[in-house]
Length: 251
Image 1: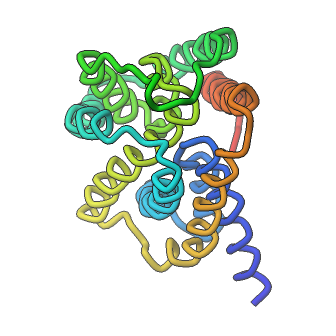
Image 2: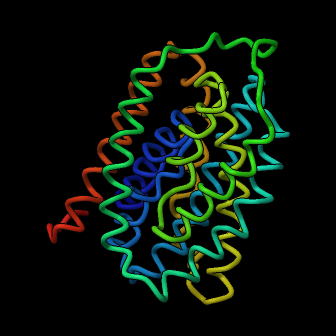
């Protein structure tokens, strides 16, 4: 009984984190699932089912606060999903370890630029998007995600921010986009027999409640602090990728 309660609290923490920053939280979910006894490939597949649940709750919370640009989501996902499939296919022919390290250094640069750029006022009427750039963002995000196994949210938020979306809109729009990306990934892994819904259901209550709470909390935080928090996450993930490539054992 105590173990199940602990799993719910862990799920809540991950969901809160995901909803707050518009990310999937796969780098937290996968280690938990391996502790529950799943092999790594099945843990990754099951984590996508978990991300679908937390992203849906986060998306609902951000939608209630009107922090989502649907047109961006539709265009981006139309290019992201096939690009992710292509990236995953190409991994069979490439050594992705070196690419992972290079991408880690690129994330450090993105975090630096994110901190340096002044925040745009978070008023919807002031949000102007060059929709011609969205397909490019979809391809970059999807291909990198499929090639390197990186959460779409980690890429979505800075890319949406580069379009001129205020940080709250970048996070809210990322949450909705992430739901569709994770759902597509879940279906793919399910076909391969790599999704354990029984394990996902253990985390579900905490993930859903945490995702909704995170979206609500994000709305209350000053944009600059939110941006700093997201940049810190980028740095942590980047350092983790570089250390793994250097042969260090990291969770």
